[in-house]
Length: 104
Image (tube, rainbow, N blue to C red; front, side, top):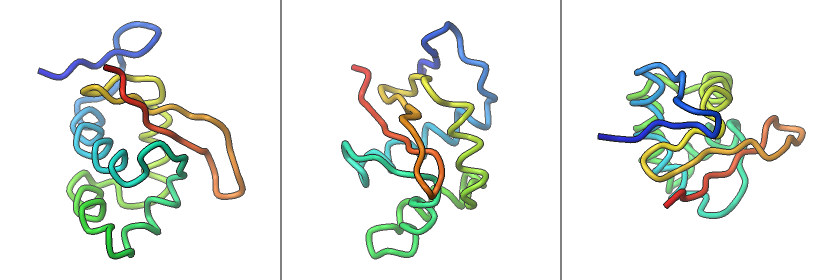
C-alpha cells in the first residue's frame, strides 16, 4: 500500500488526487529526470513523440489541462507518493516551476 505523507504530517489529498499522482508522477519523473518543468510544459509535451504515455495518464486521470495539473500539483507539493516527492521551486513566465525527487 502506498505511503502518503507530507512534511507536516498526514496528507490531506483526496483519494482521486492520490490515484492520479500515483500514475502521473512516475511518468513525469521519467520524462524530466532531474529537470524543472511547468504544468504547461506537460500539456505541450503530450504532442511530442515521447509524450504518448503522458497523454494517456493525463487523459485517464482527467488532468488534461494546465490549470488542472497546476491545481493538483499545488495540493501535492511536498507530499511523498510511492517514493517520489513533487516540489514547487519557483516560477517563470509559464507558471509555477516543479521538480520531482526520489524520497528513498
